[in-house]
Length: 362
Image (cartoon, rainbow, N blue to C red; front, side):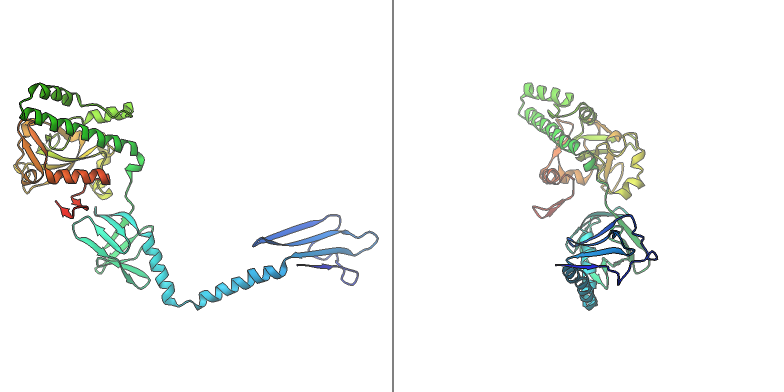
């Protein structure tokens, strides 16, 4: 539909109007919803002092119907929407934004899935509940935003959450070759122990030479990755060591391609100041009770581990639970429980003491 109005001598367009149209033509379009409104001013008509003005409106009726009327209808609907519904939408939006992995300012790792939050401090899984326009979790109320959650306890203490730093995105190829290389070294160690036990000393000698040489690198390794792997070629689960700085004895339980600890722990331990930084491999280790009582488990940088058979046997009940002593190797091999944990690590990409598929916790 097109509606046109044309000026005439009865409705003059005088020079006092807001636009002087003499000698030029002005066009202006306003786009909205696929339709347009166009204002056109033409040149002065020959022989007359009045200007001719034309306003052409394309689809005015449709524009009003679909634009102004529809907008007012939506506004009216919003006004009529119950307050409780708006609050529920706000809570759902908050909960949606909280999904995924977090870490807090005291070193806990939190995994939010649906309306459940699982904490790494051993307290288990907690339900996220409604609290007016906000949320409640484990005795705290959300007072921050979904981008920067702040959780306040009733005594006023506030805990902050943030997304964990993902080094995996920084070097995903390294993670793959690291785990495959460590698995190959561990397999050489298993075969070497089996050959010695069966008194196949010729095979055991070949395997020992391969172990001492650091095995073989994955085919697609870069030279830089080969150098990084070679630095830890004698460090696999079951290898005994002495801590270079603190001098305690221990045994490796699991390997990580970089420091996977929460950000708060990394800051507290000043990991970034280490000569090889937080991107070097780290190892889950248990400590000899004679050096540190109470069965400690530590997370140690590769640069601080000095492998040695002299530390065998390590005296700790943790070694008895997860490792099989092999005096022929001067160390250990993973026992059944640790083997399950290591398989779980390869599936998840990170070591954890929980085994989801078997419902067991070590």
